[in-house]
Length: 176
Image 1: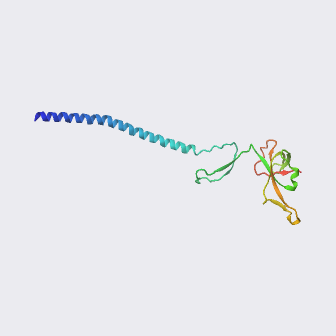
Image 2: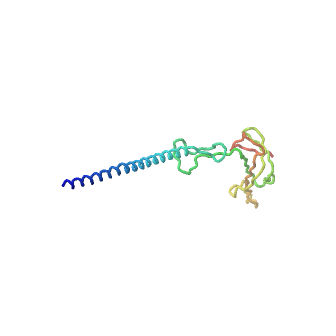
Image 3: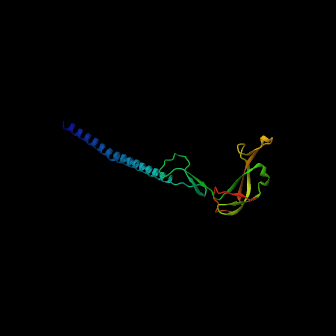
């Protein structure tokens, strides 16, 4: 009976030692893995906040001036929706609408003189673009007299010299 009790005590000791070793090693390893997982989760949360912060800044692909802002402060904007227009002031041009019966005075490559009333100044432009505005843009119908509809043409010209005072939307008057 005493020998059986001894063998049972030795087996109980071995089981307790095994449980102790498992608790010591296993719990430590699991605790370390759990702590590492919590650290990685916290790093992910920080990275998410950093990405939100970087998304609050907008960088334009061109130098220019913000000419229009669409949402007001506090309004929600959907992903991909435009929120502002940036005007590239380094590539300014002027545009004129000319009736086709007066088109002979305008050629691509020609230099024009225009008056800018807003700044009381004459400027020079070089014509680079001419195109009709479509059949809806007839200035004068002459079909009643057996003729044709006179179409309107859009003419664009780049400024020959840098014009920092001229802003988009200013009127230009061609000098004849």
